[in-house]
Image (cartoon, rainbow, N blue to C red; front, side, top):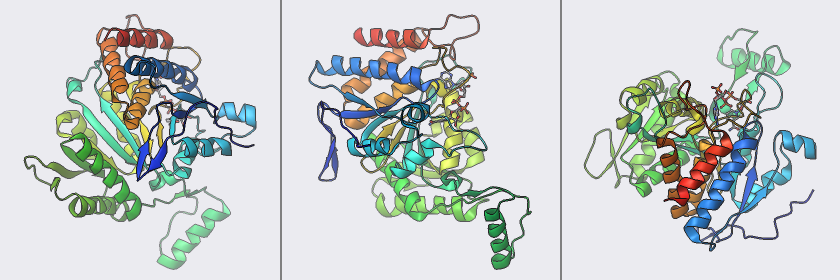
Length: 401
Ligand code: NAP
């Protein structure tokens, strides 16, 4: 089927190496599975109201629904139709809900496929405190932005199932060529980490740090054990800092007016963000570490219901909450839409619509600080708002700002 763009609105265009966003941009939307169908529509409602309040009708988003996941399977007979991928590549701006991935068998992750085919190599995940009830004493000190490499590592999905002909061939090759003996009943995964992909994510993180005035960039890796993948990641990251950002950074020691670039081993990093959150700022890391540390960091400020993300390529941005489809609460109307709302705010920030972005962030903070929260954040016995009620409160708070 041919891709058919909406009749209204305009496409964001790249001119002179920069993305130009029109006043009525077409933004692709994939609702996703599970709670995606609940949180994405309300995030759109909040975004539309913020844009209206900020620009009084001069700007407006034309949302264009594209299908993926269960809805696509039902309507188009496939999980990730070609026109969805082409549509995002064409309009360059997108919002996406979570898509289900079966564990151990079945189809590969559609999320991973989308990131790979669109070359969305940087997964940018801010973790900030919005006043949610938390047992963590230093929550208000948390202000991280995680740059997770998105296309490589064991996440690239190069793996061979135990007892298959493919696995047997790889095992045989390892023994014949390198004398490496691996148990014959093993499943195998390959962990590619390239200089190219490492350096472009580091470049993006450092550029972000320079543009937004951040203080520290920490490389998180397990290079003491996986020397030629994670160890090389560390080395190649430092190389970018030294060669391309020398006027902005100081390596290893704090210097006034300079961004400190340092590194931490992954396991240490998990305790560091808890005992000394103020010492961390921008965190750059390979794909798998980034997956783990994002949820752990989100837990410090209220959980994955609060964690937003932006997948960036050179000129394509796809915003999505960090959380998944949460099948245990899907369909009940109780999911926390904050992660989706903050993801749409990140997309607006990326588009340069700063006034609307700020309205959303301030209103969300005001709502949560006044004790209006969804069930995941409510203390035992306290009243919790449903997804839609919470979004209405955020809109009311925006109108009162
Ligand atoms: P998950 O969907 O993030 O859910 C884990 C738990 O976090 C839920 O059971 C729920 O906890 C809580 N939670 C998550 N989002 C919430 C929200 N908005 N509001 C309130 N509570 C929320 O992770 P999962 O269970 O590991 O994964 C489920 C499916 O999602 C899998 O198929 C996975 O592959 C997929 N997934 C997709 C993406 C993506 O599309 N980017 C990302 C992650 C996972 P309680 O049990 O406390 O209610």
